[in-house]
Length: 117
Image 1 (tube, rainbow, N blue to C red):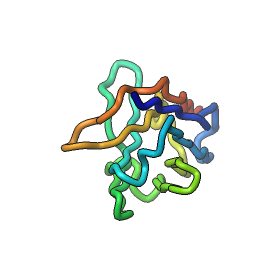
Image 2: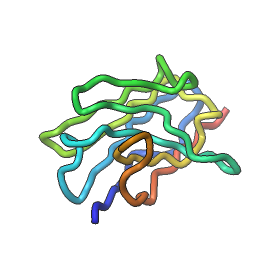
Image 3: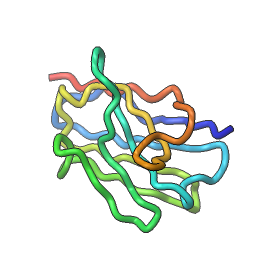
């Protein structure tokens, strides 16, 4: 059973930045495509950024150009650098491995990001 732990969230003003980190109970990052998801109140969880094992990245239109996903295999972490934050980015953010287009492991508790206007 893999445990995922997200951290780095907080309250920030619009235009600010945050860096989220994802750690796992064992090394899963070098063998899985990884993604950052978010779930806003009353909305479904959505994938906002993904990084393949080979390093290629993809982003949802809503965050492209503002968010950057990366992976540090030595530290067994995946991060999400979020710049130019907007109030609509407010959500709980989660990380997970991606397999056949779906999440692979049980969800962690996530980390709350709140962007004030």
